Image (tube, rainbow, N blue to C red; front, side):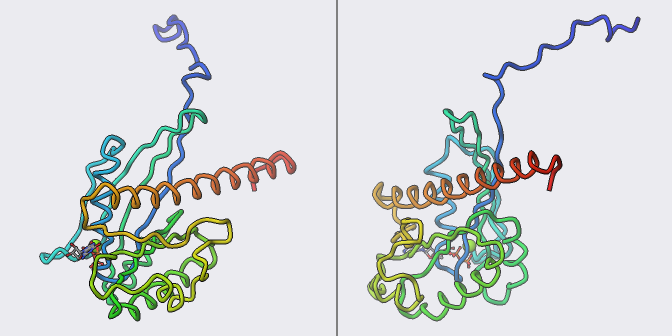
Length: 229
Ligand SMILES: Nc1nc2c(ncn2[C@@H]2O[C@H](COP(=O)(O)OP(=O)(O)OP(=O)(O)O)[C@@H](O)[C@H]2O)c(=O)[nH]1
Ligand SMILES: [Mg+2]
């Protein structure tokens, strides 16, 4: 009899110890210099104790994102015994890097569109938003909007922004969610960090809920047909 066979079998983990893992990717998209990387660093401050990877930024010497930024957080959702590992990434906003953006967008479960409040950037906001809608229309990826740089002297009024971007004028999404969050990502004030936190948690909850519904549907299909579809 081999030694391994004489060992008592390792007890199976109790249901208490079983924690399911859900992995998702949230992406920050928007025109160049709108504040995606700044928000990415803010999130690392806000959720520091949940950060599980060092994170990296691939940037040019003048600190424009060349490829992307990427970091991972792990959030325990205790009542449901579900841990959510979130990869937060940003794209490059520079218009000449379209193919890079499309590549980074792959597998994103949710997107934050970061708009620039400057009136002079409205055309760039529009182009970038339309590009995003084009790439996500088939997957119907949830999108929330972060209207950043609210501190600028020439900041566009929220109503004008909604109008110019052809967004609902009551700033409410179809599911009653807030469409646009007004932020100053460069500010260290707790109030400003709190808005970024709300925006992030709002999108995360939407994505987790969507994922649960899709998993349940797949499971039901499997039960009904006796196989995985
Ligand atoms: N006034 C003001 N400046 C901001 C704000 N957020 C970011 N900035 C500044 O805007 C500049 C660009 O910010 P980034 O975060 O690098 O912008 P980005 O969207 O990542 O830009 P790309 O990587 O080129 O696409 C930096 O100088 C930031 O300090 C804000 O809320 N208000
Ligand atoms: Mg950047």
